[in-house]
Image (cartoon, rainbow, N blue to C red; front, side, top):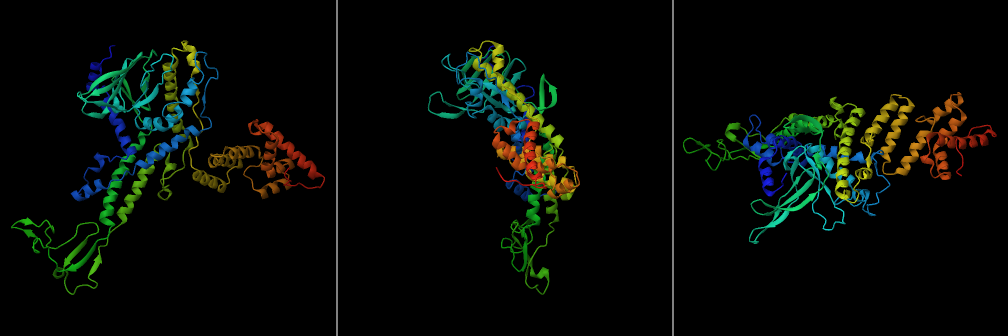
Length: 576
């Protein structure tokens, strides 16, 4: 196909068949994430709502739903902290690749803008893909190297649905970049900084267009035969929604939050108006002061009501902190003392609405099994439930799989751009690609939640083995930033024959013959014994479980031999 400026202009004008559908799919979620006021919710007038209250709601709008989505993204960013998040490269680099120019060097140390692709994935990709499942991810060239001996510097760019101008699956894609370029008028008198950039990508070629003058006149600045054999661009993906117009439309994996986020926005706006009308103090006092505009008549002319006093004939204030004036003659005699009071208001409605807003936010998080992120647990309402760890793990695992799938494609296309010439053998280039394992264990639950679960388990007399595993999970969370302590405690719990057992219970079990003297010694001194083993063997933590236990129990046997001569079992011994 011939890629020209005319081809680009036609694509810009026509758009692809699913353009409107995919843009709308992303718009609502992004609105909550960006904190933009949802016009369709806030602008809609409530029954019997005065214009002033509606305008007030709009003027003071606060994005109450922005925080829960941000919390979700922050929590999901911990995927990369999983112990089994590993990007493994082949140590053998093809002979045609210069030192310092390997795929690993480029993608993990020298990647433009982010240092590594992993940083890009968990800073830009994660949020963009979750907000817009139909966004297009493309590996592009912003400029071509002048010398053939230089390696190309491809970068991955995310094109939101509104910037996916046109595409035909397997043939071409037309994408508008969020980057801009400067351009001047024909006479050169004025310079603008909002010039548009477009890419047209086919299975063999990538062309970059830059705006060069007003009136959407474009020039080709990059024309490169990448020769990959497929378009180095693809949809981010998510939950399948429908297949229409020879194209798959996706829903975001967090789209289940949307109905509850909408309700939270709507009711929080109502709450703000309710607070104005039912919480702020309003004072009244008795007076003989007439409205100066209508001289107390309440009318202007024959039939017109006075706009200053709304036809009451009294001078009065209308702000939430205003005061109401009551005529002495209408109030009767004598005037109450003191002649000032406050309007008594029912605040229960505002309290109920406040609880409902929290409830909607909680349900939004609950819809993706992340209710533990809610600021208010809502146990008092009976809404809160135990976190379903299996469902939470399944949800996070599905996102981790998406991230790995996207990264696999990005690594492949970058490799093709950079090494297709220097490493002509296709199999050799495949060998350069890293293997990324999809994590199976995720550290998302907060330490406070784990402590509460642990306390409940102990109160319920759950089996010590279960409590041991819960304590290990808590320790991993508590000492995540200090790997040395975390490793030591994990080994201690792994070797201790009586985990989560109180000292007095251990002694009773020993006296009753329920445990051996060796088990008692190991359990009572396990921390010191593990540290002793580490001092004698630096790689002790890396040993298999049986070898570690054998070493620690040998130390315990030495203690038993020393104490047997004295006729008792010592639970402590001097440090070596």
